Image 1 (cartoon, helix red, strand yellow):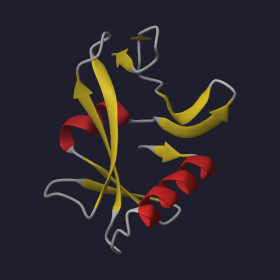
Image 2 (cartoon, rainbow, N blue to C red; image 1 turned 90 degrees about the horizontal axis):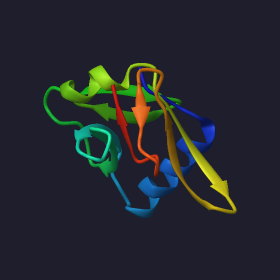
Image 3 (tube, helix red, strand yellow; image 1 turned 90 degrees about the vertical axis):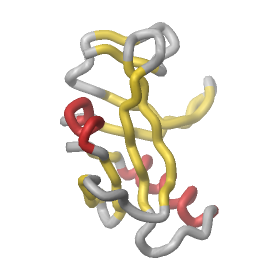
Length: 108
């Protein structure tokens, strides 16, 4: 479903270590209504899954996805980019039919 690159996994692990999260901690990836194109992505470190979450394993990194978000995250690749223009996580979504100029929201 959601695939994180090695670079993204490495960066997420740094965040988990910085938060001194426990052994059940992982990354929650969500799609939330909003943004100028209709939907936007949300990522946060959480101590564990919530009831109903799908728990994915990306090279030992737990990724939590809720039922609503799952339908929009099929085939998405998450990467971490570090460039002169800045650094951050990027999403490549094959299901997206458009995005806004700033790249922070998408439509399906």
